Image (cartoon, rainbow, N blue to C red; front, side, top):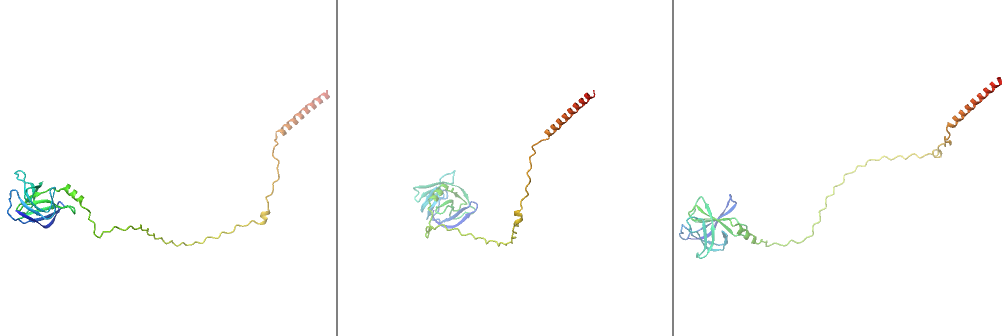
Length: 239
């Protein structure tokens, strides 16, 4: 069974935040329902598993295994060369369709779309491919940054001078009258001519009362002696 890849509509998977792009393959012959063999023709590069498939025709089918029905093999058109083997997981849909459907993971700009799920005609279950994190990261790092056609290098201009800051208008100052200081009174001529009265010089008090007291005592002693002498003389005269 040969199918040609033609894009239909793109729907967003809200629960996973992923882009789901469905493509329809028009059957050209009856396919084998056991291995799900399908001829797939792609017109642009896509990622399947960890392989980047170039534009061309490929044969997709399941590995002939009774125990595991989720091993997908991708061959070239003549099935002489195995391009990729993918360990898929079950993926279910509510309503089957009469043609093959493919869903794609969301990838960065410039990176080929990565196949997320493959549904065989008439089946409500399909094969889900894991997201190729490493391959997408390598391809994204190799994507050159696009440059606009009209892009021009900015001319080097001198740094602009800072804008002058607005100066606040000064507040009006209310002048308050200051009292005129009165002139200090000038000294009169009489006051200038008048001199303080001079004090009379006084002798310092150098003498003390001790000599006076001694002199008084000596005088009294002499007087007593004189009186005694006069008394004795009188007594002598009376005898």
